[in-house]
Figure 1: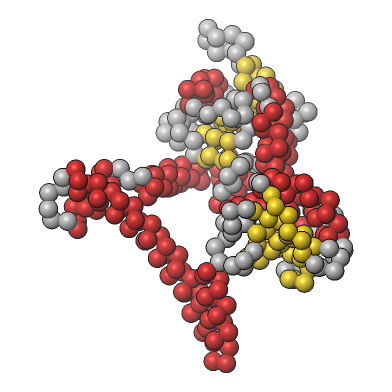
Figure 2: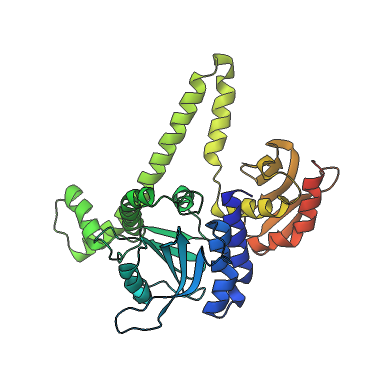
Length: 355
């Protein structure tokens, strides 16, 4: 099983069981230990690798415990503090991490609720844990850009110098992206005034500011769309340059159709769920997907003649289309993406037929 599939399996487990987990201890057993063991690759049953309930007396504080300490070559490398699933992660909840970080050799600490993982180091001051994480990873909202960085923290790839060197850029790029996202979604007054003052010569009255708040949000959205369209146009041009004139019309039509197709997060999540289901009966490297204007298809060997299912998500009522032995499609209504699991056996049967 590859790295991403291990993450997706744990993510699916959280979706299915998260609502019934009621305590911090249950969170650790159900989600955190599998993360340490399956994702990071450490043996949670080997105390030379993972020490649960790690104790390090500090000053007048005796017997205080940290949930997990990950060891390498007899030295503490990573400290982990856990909260209950669903509980917001607040730096105020990390007081023990701050204290232990200072008195151990650990350069990495993790605060988690089993779903969201905040990774800290000491960029701001040596041997003092930063107040802001350099990496935030949400198992139910996976950012593909962060997967290589998370992989650096695994047992087989662990290189503290490489991690620390990348941490600074990760930390600040992440924070800047959040600021940009927040400004594009709900522009602050200073952000609005910055643009309004460059295009409007009149007095910025409350009414004018209100108008420019709407205009700024609209302009930033259109700007992003223009950037996407420009990239797509460049792709079209590049494709046309590689084909002779007899193929130009065909290529242009195909690329224009691709522009009109918008793959949604629900469709991608649905694809990963189907892949997690059928990987037990077919090589996961053979599983592919193709999006069209009317449906999102999941196929084998990137071949439309080997369909597994179709996700009809471009409507109020979602459907999953399943195929019989003659490749006839039957649509089944679903209320949520998780309902795909209800059709696991049919999906496995279809996938097995292509072996």
